[in-house]
Image 1: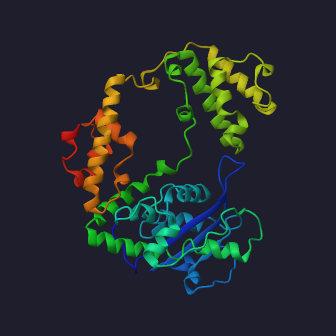
Image 2: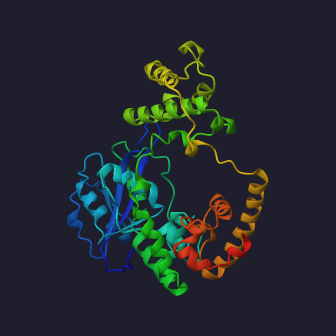
Image 3: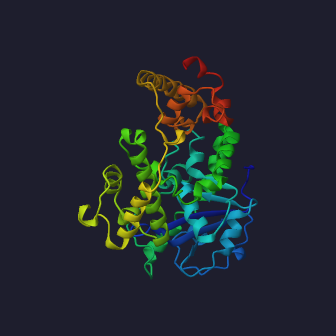
Length: 375
């Protein structure tokens, strides 16, 4: 990502959504605050009128996604010349890509991540960030709002507007601090990773089984693993097609238990475990699993690690994490940005893996060869 300044066309973005009875979130409001050289006329939208209580709030546009054409937002999301400012960007960008059909968002700047390069935690809430960088206290009074209801109250609209109107000032302050600490290039490199479209794609149905908590022995039982994979993929595709929560199709525990001990009839299932409308697909999937032999593929098996070696790797990971924290402090970088404990443990097990995050980019530059002696 290229460096930007106060004159660069910028678009602060946030979303409000409801996600309780559907597979996909229902977008209820999109908050926008243009700044720099961004022309507001590029967004011909149906905006909700509200009465700003502060001058800064007058910059906000509160877009009704239930009635607005998403095409202008798609163009803005995919425009590399327009910087999109968000706080904790992943979920908002995911919802915006689904609404607009944007294939690849460009020039994203996440103020939560950016804070981690400025001597601040990379988990900082928006309210704390705005207070830290702009000296403004944001109220948190509408966290339980149903944003798909109409009309929204003046209080709800004002609350929503405040989530975007300070992002441009916060971003400029973070860039100023990063310049002072010498971490700007690292920060902008981390922002480049946000352009990967795979981050915002719907979960893969074929890999749905990997997101289940499975007993270890399942990975060594080809028949059970085949049923787990097939049932999880069927459930994922059904949930996506019907836009329903996964657990409404079949709960995790019932799915895993059915893979281990397949029920022969609906009466063998726990009461109300699988609704009648889904039982045909459920049992058809199980029957298909028995129709052909299944060989356990190498990539599907659980990693077979020597327990003693893995325990040693976890112990060494503790030392590596401590060394990262020691070196990160004078750099003013949040140690959490270097990697999680699981990622560091994987690095200890395979320190020469060129794909390991600690062996690439700004992380490698920041740490040098300091970790090699520990692993």
